Amino acid sequence: STRTHMRTSSSLARITRTTTTRSSGSKKRRRSRATRTSSNTQDENPGLYSALDDMTGGDEEATRYAKFEYVPNEETWRAKARWNWGSPVGTAHECAKVCRTKFYVEQARALFLEHFTIRDRHDREELKLVLALLMQREGHETGDPNGWNENVAKRLVNVEFEDEEKGFESFVECVRAQVGVEESAGEREVLAKALETLRFVERGP
View 1 (cartoon, rainbow, N blue to C red):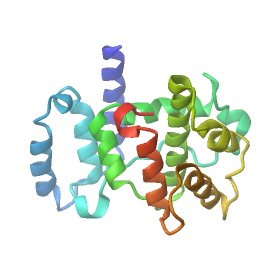
View 2 (tube, rainbow, N blue to C red):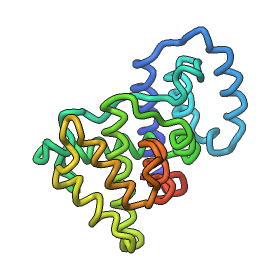
View 3 (cartoon, rainbow, N blue to C red):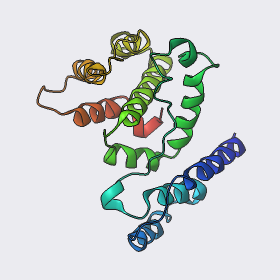
């Protein structure tokens, strides 16, 4: 319901405000915020956009996109019993709720697609979670005619991409084969193409 999403967005705002501090670039961010909040969608979600602005510390050049960590790196696909993918009980379900709240607003999804980086383990785990949720949605809504769940999601669930050194690289190569991106494309380009193909911005995870 609308009230549930408003409460969740408020909780997200509280979480994110505790994780960041303002930097010297706050004036530039405030100008950017004033421009963004003109849209109807953003006006309906002031708490979320305030939290996103707070998280950047006002420095667009250094941060690019608001980020906070919510996926426990040691409790994901390799911890199959606790992660419990596909069940309403487990770490995966709890992380999915936060993920869907974070990307509830279409413009937040568009900003992520434009600016996401792959710098640390949480970045990698979040991307795997987002894509897994998109593949799940693809199966429910379209029957998955292109085989995302069989070719990629099934392998995620079977813990095929959890090697410390080569796991994420293997995941990217699997996604590359699924979307048909050329070998010269880097990790970010491959995953951005997957997000676009699975209509991340249009429908969300």
